[in-house]
Image (cartoon, rainbow, N blue to C red; front, side, top):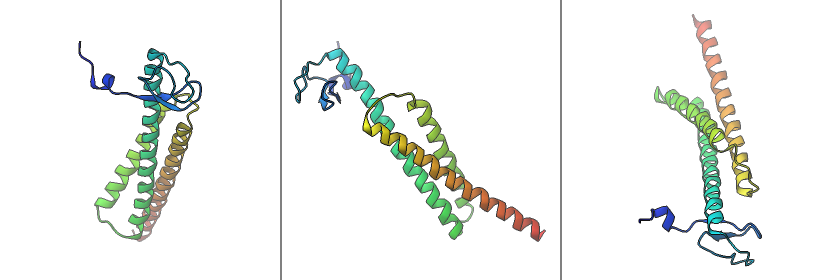
Length: 152
C-alpha cells in the first residue's frame, strides 16, 4: 500500500476550540489541548487549503487588475504601437475572466477565516479596477471614433 505525497505531508487547520493553526497529525491541540479527530482534521485541513487557494487567487487577480489599469493609463499617455491595444484587450479579458472564475470556484465558501474576508475584498477591488480600466478604454475608443468621423 503506497501513500501519495500529499497524504504523507502534514497539513494545517484551525483548532475548532481555540482557532489556532495546528497540524493534521496532532492528536490534540498544542495550544489548548483540545482532542483532535484524525478524519475531521483531514477534512477541515482540506477545506482550509481551498480557502488558502481562494485567498491566493483573489490576490493574484487584484494584482492583474492593477496592472491592467496602469497599462491602460500608460497606453494612453504613450503610444505602444499595435502591441499595446492587443495587450490591453488580453489583460482586460484575463482580469474579468479570473474574477468570474473566482466567483464560480470560491464564492460558495462559508467561513469565518479573516483571510477569506480579505480575499473577498481583493476580488471586489479587482472588479473595481477592471471596471475603471474598461471604462477608460471605452471612453477613449469613443473619442477616437468621434475624431475619425469628424475627419472623414
